[in-house]
Length: 185
Image 1 (spheres, rainbow, N blue to C red):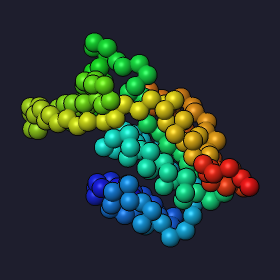
Image 2 (cartoon, rainbow, N blue to C red):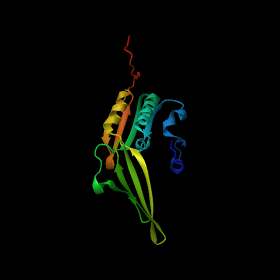
Image 3 (cartoon, one colour):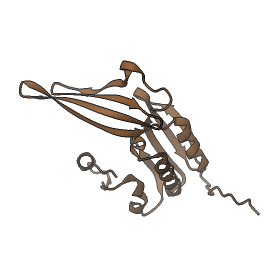
Image 4 (cartoon, rainbow, N blue to C red):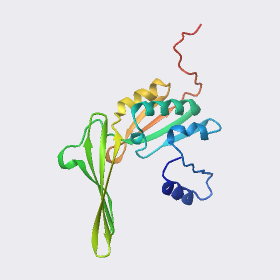
C-alpha cells in the first residue's frame, strides 16, 4: 500500500509469482483493505516519518496491534532524526549517484520535524540540470516509538540499522488479551 504509483508498479513487476497485491491508498486506512488478521505487518524505509504528526503514528500503531494475530510480528524501519541531529556540513547527505544523476539532501531541523531539501543534479546532453524540492518529516525518537508499541501490549526489540536507520520488531504475545483500564473481577 502506497500513494506513489511508480513504486507500486515496480513492486508489481518484481513480485513474480508471489501473491502480492498492490493498493494505491493512504497508509492510515490500511485496515479497510485487510480482510483478516495478519501474521506479519511490515512498514519499511522511512515511511513512519512521512506521516503528518505523532498522533497519526499512534493511530497507525493501534491499528497494527489490533490487526496482528496472536504471536504476530510488526517490523518497521525509520531514520532517527531525533536522537542526535546532524550539525554543520554533516546535514548534507549524498543519497545516491551514477553517471547521469547525483541526489543529495540537506536537513533543516525544527522541534518536531525536519525539512528535507533534495538537490538532484541530472545530466541532460552535455550539461547538468539542477532540480530542487523539499518536504517535512517527523522527528520520531526511537525510545518514543518503542514506548508506544509497548503500551499496546507488544514486546519490542530495537536494532541499529545502516546510515542512521532504526529497525524495530514488535510481537504480539501468543495469548493476547487487550490491555484494559478495568481491573479483572
